[in-house]
Length: 93
Image 1: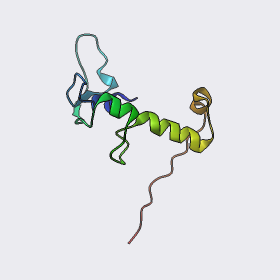
Image 2: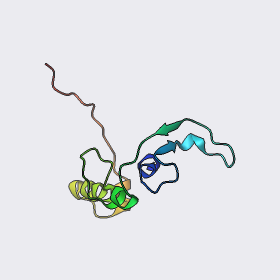
Image 3: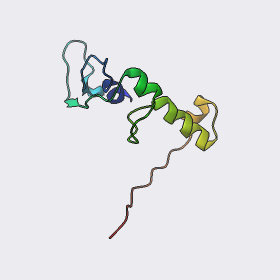
Image 4: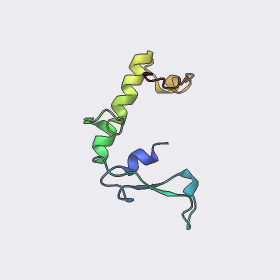
């Protein structure tokens, strides 16, 4: 689930490109190759610091914050919670 995020690392073999999970084949890549660009080093993507508020850097910090906000300290317990996503309503002018 974090393939595209890791593909944004400067050290990634795809050099800013990512094939989705539908590309799983030993010898023949399938699916669509998508340019995701590069955002920083693998260390920055995983551990920060996050220079932008778009969620592309500091994945571990984001996970820690989400767990602290919801009151969970155990990752297995956090994985079992129900996720509710409300649609963005934005300001209506």
